Image 1 (cartoon, rainbow, N blue to C red):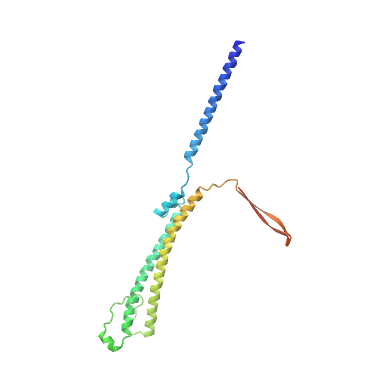
Image 2: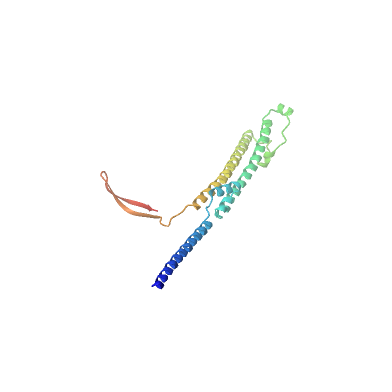
Length: 219
């Protein structure tokens, strides 16, 4: 009888110790899993993506791992810089040509007596735009050419300024794109998201029955 009590007592003690050990081990495993998950899951920072793009265009896209956007970004920047250089070069050429031809035009329209006391302008950069014997051309032709030079000067200046605006726009778009991409990276898309579209019949006292579609989104 005493032996039976001893066996029961030892069994209870063993169960208590074994149960406590299992609970401790289970708790340790849960804690270990929690720590592992916390160490693996890292929050993607939209602030970092934005600041990287502000500092250097394309760096935010690299941070977001959208590497395919970087060549497109720099292709746009390169084309815009080329447009700025092209328009600036032609603007300077037409500006100089318009200035020189305006001085020549004013001298050419002087009377014969005034030409004797007025020196003929020697600068003729307008010849690079349209080479001609301008001493023999008519006044109407000279007026047309002068207007053409002025319109070209104004047009290239406008296109140059617009190219600068586009360049700033590309830079801002690079920042916005990086920030939006970073926000969508943290956006959790649940597998339970479903969209259901089915035909539906509705009734109105004025129009009667009408057939349409019903869209149901579940998440």
